[in-house]
Picture 1 (cartoon, rainbow, N blue to C red):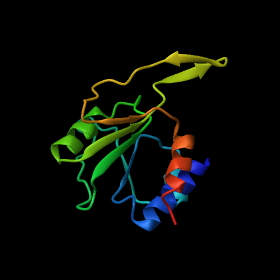
Picture 2 (cartoon, one colour):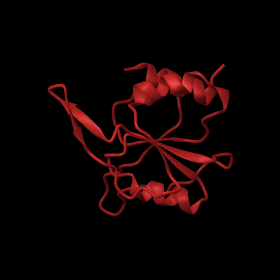
Picture 3 (cartoon, one colour):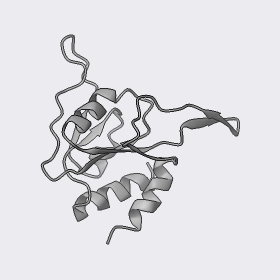
Length: 129
């Protein structure tokens, strides 16, 4: 558990973040903050990623750590007219060595903040009451 989830909750309560939190993880951390959550991975034979409906007040989709496959959700966000902001360092560390791992299917109209979720929470906190 990290400060990221606390910042996420503050953002939701302040109205900066709206709609369901779309999540690939089954770790229950979103639930700990009592936020509405929709799992992106549904393990059924006929349905893999559920239909996504974005909140009417949403202006963007913030994608935290893109290396789980979220491309269908990102495509749906673009189709709905939302801007896409990626928060991803585009790599990972092994034995204190950074291994590049570029994002796929980004567009010139997307935004990329090359940082971790933990660092992003510090940025988000500057905009929260």
